[in-house]
Image 1: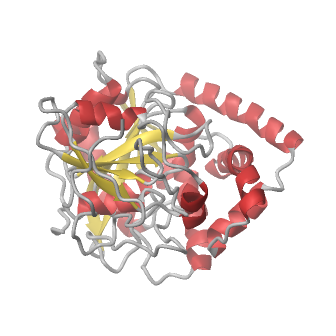
Image 2: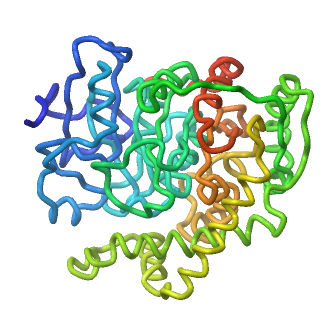
Length: 408
């Protein structure tokens, strides 16, 4: 039975975060650990009786209302949180900018002249604009971590497979995860308590500073991030500086992108060939390239991805805390050309984002400072299964996030 709408239209707000063509809301349970809190969901999560749009009007038009609600959404509703609406997604999730050819780009409340980041753009904006308390997104190649960093939020990509993907649009299953945003780390952890369930924690005793990742940042960004690294170093006197990838993060990214593209085309290619939808430039180019990945190339890349995952598992110890920049810098200007964002900045960012995807590792991004009036994020990452350890550390040590976006 479809849940009752708590409102027949999205919240009134000035950032363009919410979907209007397929709005849905639902009240949470009368009591629970998240009672009194509101949340939003990216337009990839099913809610029974309503249509999921996947960031594209042709997808919305060609799919029937969902028969069931996504497992992650059910858990939050059962915990007492109220669902107040769906949020914009980049087209079919295949972008990191926040720009949607069909629906436009939400405004970044933390830096109005900058990109909000994608593909969970609307969810990040809804939280940063204080329209909801927290929001669900998905993260394959960085779709929670990037908008969290751009919008001055805490965000998490959990261990791959840790949270059910039932009722979520299929994209690249090897890397797809449910993620979420909050303005403070204590709430990020409270949501994690619900979505992850009770998990024993063992903490950390050594800090690993990923030198090859920090080499991607310019001097001003590095100075801000170094303050966060120093805070972590004070907590863990036992620390080491070393590269994550012995062969270069660029090489790892090539592996990631090949596997990701192959899986995306397997998931979406049949629908694209049947419906012939229109795409914006960046997304359209990537989908066209994905269609050309042959089976031998994909198989070879999957084997290499398996090897990289094993390398990361061997390199990162049970009580190692890895720190790295979330993105190379603050969000690019909102008026950046598609070519600038897609051809220049995207690759730099993806080189930092791909290790967690390849290793299936949990990663939390923290709003550590500001450069030219825009937030920058520092990430902490750990072995598979250490999600609650990361959330606990963030809540204990980073409650004084330096950037607070404006009200919606």
